[in-house]
Image 1: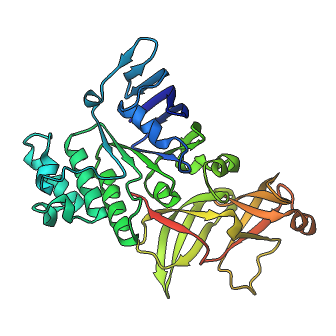
Image 2 (image 1 turned 60 degrees about the horizontal axis):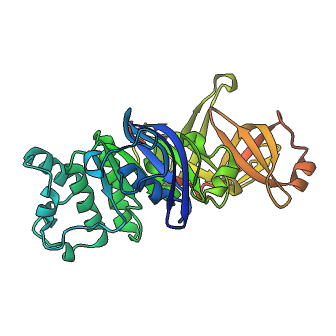
Image 3 (image 1 turned 30 degrees about the vertical axis):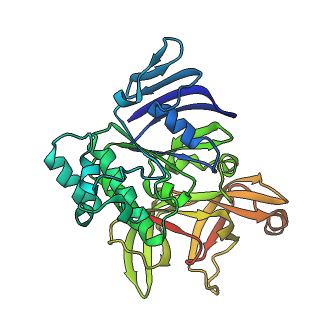
Amino acid sequence: MSLDIAICARLGGFKLDAQLETQGQVTALFGRSGAGKSSLAKAIAGLERPLSGHIRLDGETLFDAKTRIHVPPWKRQIGYVFQDARLFPHLSVRQNLTYGSGPIQSGLDQTIALLGLEALLPRSPSGLSGGEARRVAIGRALLSQPRLLILDEPLSGLDGARRSRLLDCLEQIKITGGPSILYISHNLDEIIRLADHVTLMAGGKTLTTRPLEQVFEHPETGLAAGLKAPISILIGTVLDHGEGRSRLLLGSKPDLGQRAIFTLPSINAKPGQPVRFFIEASDIAIALTNPTDTSVQNRLAVEIDAIEPFSDGTLLVTLSGYGYKVKAIVTLQAVRNLGLRTGLRVTAMIKAAAKVRLNNIDS
């Protein structure tokens, strides 16, 4: 999917100023509630008409104020799943799924299996849980054969088990080559798990659009979009499991001549499987040596790339390791006492039980 957007819109008292260009199977809009994510999505779907600018999907112009092009929503081939499922209450689950999709039995059977809807088919929407209703709504949208599927906070209000199951379903849609997805959320766990590219939003404006691994490199934009602290996104490959823990290989860097190993509580992933995770900067400490008399299991040999002012007398230190980078927050006093400077080799210490969020990556 390719999206090329540059629009201004006024929705009631809310002003939207959005510019983004992105390519990828799953692009996420991330930001606080009220940032303008849903407003932008509605403009893309044709549910709101901008005042100026253009919207292009896969090279086709859906909206252009100058040439007065405004393709109506039903001709855009865009599926939209709202926060509330909006199922037809007088129809069964099966009838909701097939409404407007035509007689495509093979696609119906595949979608039912993909989303685990077999047992729900004869039921009415009033008898569904929140998670079940969302799955049916996603299935109905998929069966309309969209080229873009917009999911607006699809996990909002769901408990842990239902969130996990629906996330698994969304991951399967991605794995099986389903339509491109525009995923709206203010939940970082969901974004890390699903997205290829991320657009950060705040105050009705798009701040930046970049690949997931790069989008949070500048802490100020992440904080503006709602992050509580700077994060580092890492990719590792499962090495082995044992004694209640799992070990990951974080990659290699030939000039350093070794692999970095990261230990964490046991995860459900096979050896050789890649996983993506993030670490908050506040969970990383810096030592001048590699201390062995400590309970901290993850001690990574790194080099200081940069030291920048952060906030309230703290500094943000960028550390480069074996094909990855992490960020740590330290006090000005610590920088002075340790003599930290760019180019210095140090040890990054991260507790195995730190706030590490893991997400499987398709191999």
